[in-house]
Length: 552
Image (cartoon, rainbow, N blue to C red; front, side):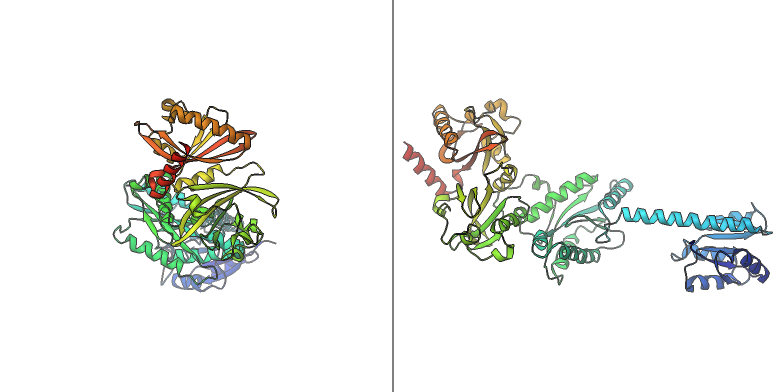
């Protein structure tokens, strides 16, 4: 059934209103006004939205031109199409009406069929435009929160940069802290409610002309054109406080990274990348804070992260942090909770050997602080309760100012795919990682940036300087010793640790502890070396010296 629209007929002559009404009455609801002032009142107070106006020009009190001007200035009326009633097509009054926003014209004397056709076409065209506009709006809006989506934000940033290539703007990356825990503990429906609440809070932090968007997941962004850079830190602090103060069952906070145009870039990709670097820097420094990008962030000073939970939440393999003495669980990610077979919150504060491994006493394979020192320790656990073999890498850390044990656990009964994630963790701990073919030649197939920094060369320089082999860094004596021990390790499929020296680019001998493991990947054997610079601590240096003396 065709929808019946409402038409307003405005003419000071009653006979004209009557004639037009008779023509349109079968297909439309009709409203009438005898002058311009009355017409505006009807438009603003009508019970049903008016789809079109038929407007005479020459009227007392307020003529048609004045009505057009008033409608054009009123945002609630400006979208209503107006068909102007004229005496003569192509007259000057039509040109003036067009300039004031008229949509079409109806000439006297009236032709009923032509009038119905013009009114029908006008409403159809306006509805088509409105449908297209709504579709475009949906395509630019995040359906969950009602904020602008990634596409809309990219276009907003691109539009500003195109219009003002040298204009000042602040580009904000906003990431919720620990949001994954909300979904894990309370479910995705609760997580969606949190995202909606946070979105409303963020909207209240920005002014008209500033864009705030949800890029996806728990990642938001904002563009502030022409910011007051001196007062921006106070605004960023206020945004963090607004999110942290939300009275939700699942308390969250946010971390913000900021880049600026034109200094940090004049295109979307550059501003995004630098804001993301600033965001990660802020995450490393403890979350619920902000950082504004500076060039030094591209070369951060090596440091132990005070809080790595933002990273550990994303690791696909099990990560466990326990009190060093009591072995009570301080943190675990979802894969570790899956290993325990229960919810994360049910594990916190419980002994890891009971909760994870199903034992009544501490695990005999678990490394002690004395065994680990300031390096890393590798061991293997054949778990009867799980029916699997796990490799466990242990690092002693500080967690919330408590001495703690960080353990990275993965299943080695199937092919391991976590090398890259280990690289991320150990790089943050300043351990040089090298993956070599276990064929006796020690050809390097992969290494992290920490390793190249240790030996004083770049990734591209290594093949030409050292023949792309780990042996190029060792003396003849150490080459023979490493080859012998690696051959035995490959035979036994068992790792080991040794003290050795790397001959770095400037000829210095760098003392290191080399923790070596053997693993299979895609049917091929590899040796995995974790080099720790022993100069980092007195304790590790003493361990290195004792190891070397024992060998001699």
